[in-house]
Image (cartoon, rainbow, N blue to C red; front, side, top):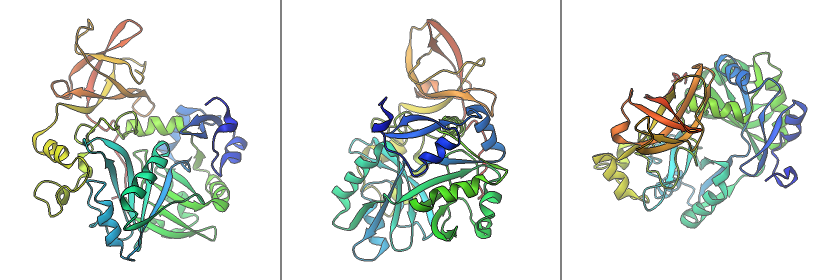
Length: 379
């Protein structure tokens, strides 16, 4: 979509322009890929201070149980995800994913127990399909509502707590994956201690009419700066976090995508609520017996990154193709290129040497453990 007038805009669109944001099409929205500082400086600033991201393009969905019992919404949602939702306590958030009948991943998401309802945050490119999916399967039990009156901000980095603490001192009492409704600038916001950068941080759901004022208040702090989608991608890749559509998709199972840690014991073989979700037979079988391929980290030699869809080979002559790069960029924190790919199991051990075909040459890479940086979540 080259015509920016055809793109949707978040409530912060004009603020992005005033800050010098370079706008690009992303998931149907006009979004800032970077600001005048540039992707590298924005990335490093987030690792050292606190970066503010506009993620209002994401979908915020309320699942409200018709019975008034949040447990009924939890059990209903468990028919679509291989995740323990019933055991999720009020004020807590959990990572999850919708699966299809073949065990593939329809989308990955964040799920919060808000006491009397569930809040589900889904990816921008998938939100219409996700809402339709939930309405088709959950409407007998829940009201499914896509919120269009709230923006979503992500404040990420080691100084995120001190920046947000200027507006609400109680933030220091929150732990990783805690969710609270707190007053910011005299309006109730839903704040989770989570994010997509590998750093400590927060995601803040704020009514549209207060989004710009809140963003400006946070950015007025000397240790907070606006960060675009370019640095968001390099940050999450260094942290070994999946981008839906690149690293996981409908052809990828949780075990292949190395996100089976999101499936709690109660939903696995022998658990109290084993199975009962789409693709359960395959997913539980792979948890027990393993898979033939798996997502791994890659570190190319030299400084040049290998990009998405670059072909990968087991040998330097290009005789045996074994996959392609799913995500690849330069990692400013690790001072070198980083990538992820889905490889056959015989090639997934850390230290394994493989080769990428770049402009007719076969460049060496080494399979590496994920993540590339140590997360700093506040446990």
